[in-house]
Length: 343
Ligand code: SF4
Image (cartoon, rainbow, N blue to C red; front, side, top):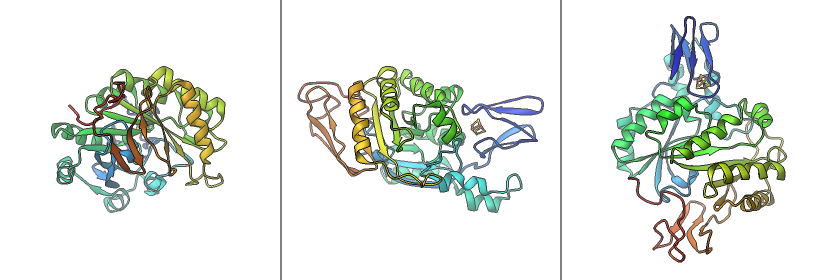
């Protein structure tokens, strides 16, 4: 996923489209680097985090509820969000003395190498139905994610991409062949916020969301609400209207509370009334399914037509109505999602 020129290469994995050369060998993610006219991944097959999580933790609420997700991530990221909640993983790569790294240092910093077969074996042993590429931005460990995802498909397991949405159009053409569900962060509805706090742009993220929807893949959107940064009525209205109009009113929107973290410790945690405001704005825009994150609150799935409760959630405890099969058993309204079996 890169193009070679006489003295440099252009990485085409994400919308930064970094130009890598002998003079500037590292991409913005600090993970892809240039050597002898080629682009390499510094993390190789190493994973910095491997866990079995409830799928609800990704978060995905309308994709195989109650499934387990073997969740993997590496170090590094193509964003530099000031509030990053996985900053120990994301920034680990910056402490390596690039390019004079040695394998011992890399192993210590970047985690253990895994073959896809090994991870699939772990998934099978624990009855895990899905693989999630998560924690840091999976686009930057594209080859690893892809080889594992392809293996997972052969074993009839579903693949989940938890992403900041900055993957390029070219990368998506490949991803869409083996990824079944995406959770994409829309971190704000302001180009300035993206530029000032993430070192990125909003437009490519919105384009990715539209592409996922157009490809007919499952998409849920997450927004971390940060006081006085992205929580104005005007901005939330624009964001909710984008979801409703461009992605569809049945697209799930997760609104999560911020807690002070990383380089943003000067702000208080998001009060619940801000989430309530976002919820009302989302409902006003016509969204059918809005869920709270990072606060202790029931997050039930309710039929948008007759208000029957179909799925009860308290934390990660999930109870599905016995006769729910993707349609409301009372009024027959179809609830968007992939409800149990991946085919
Ligand atoms: S993955 Fe993105 S940030 Fe990293 S080198 Fe490629 S284009 Fe740059």
